[in-house]
Amino acid sequence: MVNQDDSFIREVNEELRSDQMKAIWTRFGGLIIGLAVLIVLGTVGKVGYDYWQETSSSQSGDQFLAALNLARENKSDEALSALAELQKEGYGSYPVLARLRAATLQAQKGETEAAVAAFSEIGKDTRIPPALRDAARLRAAYLLIDAGTYEQVSSEVEQLAVPQNAMRHSAREALGLAAYKAGDYAKAKSWFQQIADDAESPRGIASRAQMLLDVIAASGKA
Image (tube, rainbow, N blue to C red; front, side, top):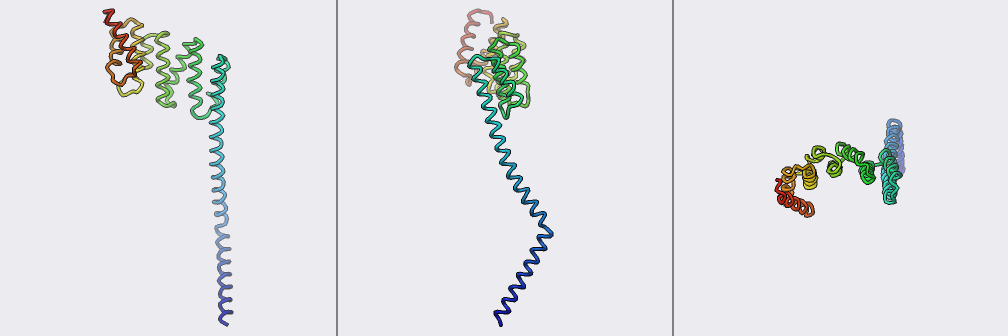
């Protein structure tokens, strides 16, 4: 009799649990399914985005290498065309690298004015990391030593020739060379002396600065 009572009680409890589950499912089933779908879609989306990011970066890298190969083969026009396409459609940092490489190719082709304009534009683009902007400014300045004036060189890099800037050594050299070329030996001496006095100046830049300081001193012009 006791066993029959226990069996009856278990059946009643199971029915109650079953009814409770049905009630819960009726009330919250749609929400549960919706949450499950969102979790699945989120997972699929994350995997899909990671795949897209990886493949996009890989494709842009392949395009950039192909453009570099064209440049090495002296197919400058084809390389510039490929780099222009990469600037428009590339992923990640590749559009910026394409802009820098295209400007370098223009300089190599003798298109100095276009190259200076391209480097200068990169140097002013606040979307680009500061280190790359500074490097572009320096490249423009070195081209302007021969192709421009001291004032043009100064407008590109004098802001970099300060003690806290890591590229100050090259900026000071560009300014010194531009002043020397312009015949302003006092200004040139000032820039070269800053290089010589800076214990952190790279050996090559420091040696060139000291050589020009010696030349200026020997000339007696400053």
